[in-house]
Length: 134
Image 1 (cartoon, one colour):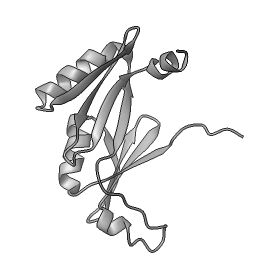
Image 2 (cartoon, rainbow, N blue to C red; image 1 turned 90 degrees about the vertical axis):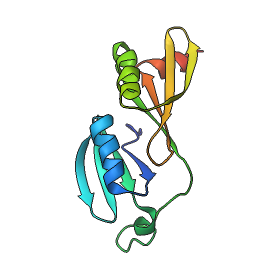
Image 3 (cartoon, rainbow, N blue to C red; image 1 turned 135 degrees about the horizontal axis):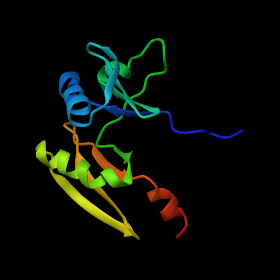
């Protein structure tokens, strides 16, 4: 038996409208579910990004309660030839690039914050295979 992928990633947020505007309008993710006062969910390629209001998800009655505090990290993989386009898109949207990392070879990634202070990263496809081979 093998794990195929990490299907869901969860972030805990303060404001549904603000997070929806960022992930939908800036990052280009499609909303696949929203419940006022609780969550907004996005399709991200073959994965799902779950954004919960922690005060609501911590008292869940049907599913196990879950929440976290503090900034989390997640990386979005993009086509290698679109890496610079993503950087330009985010900068033109007023998003500050807080760090760019050279990983060796032709691979760089860059980091930025979402409205809740989570540390997001853009990585080009193939980067992790390159790093694993080092």
